[in-house]
Structure formats: C-alpha cells, structure tokens
Image 1 (cartoon, one colour):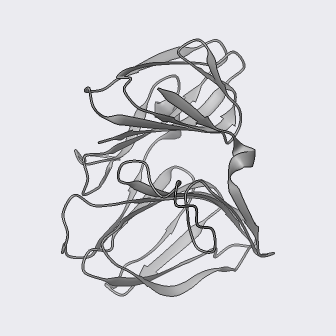
Image 2 (cartoon, one colour):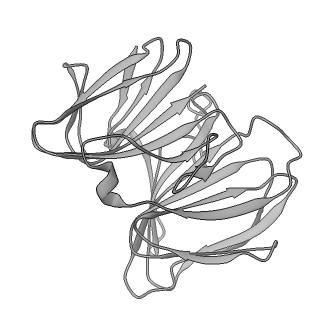
Image 3 (tube, helix red, strand yellow):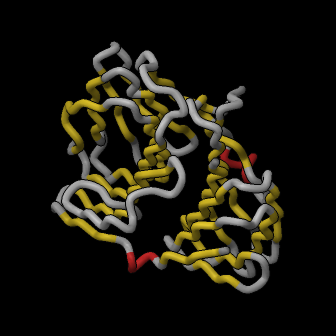
Length: 232
C-alpha cells in the first residue's frame, strides 16, 4: 500500500529565524495517529537563518541524522565532537545513554536541512558522532546509500536495520528498488515531481509511506531529487 502525505498536510512552524515542517508529531505538534512509521519517528524539513540555531540540549536513545540540502550546519556535543557540514555531507549522532549537543548555522546565508530521528535497535549504547561525505554526482540516476547499518566509505553507520538513499533523477529516467518482504519504504521528494509504480504522483516535499510492497518503480518526466528510506 502506498499512502501519500502531501507537503501541505505537514504541521508548519515559523519562529522567524526557524521555519520547520514536521512530518510526524514533534514539539508543540502532537497527533496520536501520526507518531512514527516503523522506527522512523521524526522527519523535519528545517530552514535556519544565518548565525542562529538550536542551543545545547540533551538527547537519549535515538539515532539522529542531519542531511544538509544547502548552506552549512555546525555540530558540537558533550563528547568533544565539533564539525561543520555542508551539501554533500551527512551528520549522524547516536544519543545512546545520553548526550548534549547544539546545531547552529555558522554562516550568513540560510541553511536548509532534513533532520531525521530513528529509534535504535539496541538501548544503552555509548554516545557517538560522525560526519560522512558523499559525491553528489554519484546519486545521478541511481539510489546512493548515505546512511546504513552496513556502513562503508561515504556511508554513515546507524544502529538500526535501516538504509537512507539519496537520488537525483534526470528527465525521463526510471529506477527500481526492491527490498525483503515485511519491510517499509519511506519516500520524500526534495525537488521535482516523482511517479511511483506508474500511477502515484508525488510533488515537491510530498512523502509516501509504503507497506506490503517490496518492489517500487520510481520515474520522473521532468527531473526529481529524492530521499528513500528502507525501514524494518
């Protein structure tokens, strides 16, 4: 089953320096029928003004992935890690038994990012952090893994049986995705228009939550950039 969530159905929050769109219950927005999709429990589409950000705050028992779409994002945490990430890089933090961190835009221009929270498959892990880099040209007309339980060069490690793929499809291209039976697929259109299995159309910032369907065909007539998450 493919269930579409249009961009305008998300909860929007405007704090002046921060514009956010929540795909799941988060912060002041709570919907008991929209709290998670498998282990995926937060998917925020954020734009942060220059030299503003999220001050030091704690987390526990969560895998937190930040994908920068444009601009820069600076991470600093209580384990001593500090890094600045731009387009072509991913931040992954495992909060584990407890960590304090901040995320700030260090530049004058806005930073646009996707922040994704996934429940780990194990509790009481030691807190950890990493920044991984990928080549954006490697995601042209194919699914490029950027975060996975099976980590490797350019792929951040996550403590869950989950893989995050980025792709940029040129006009007229089609790619196929297959997974084991009983798993879930989450598709988010970053830019452009995408058609799933020949009939389900997703526009910019639309999402689809897919169950009981282990083969997926992704096609675009005019070009599209997307994120696909393979979930247990």
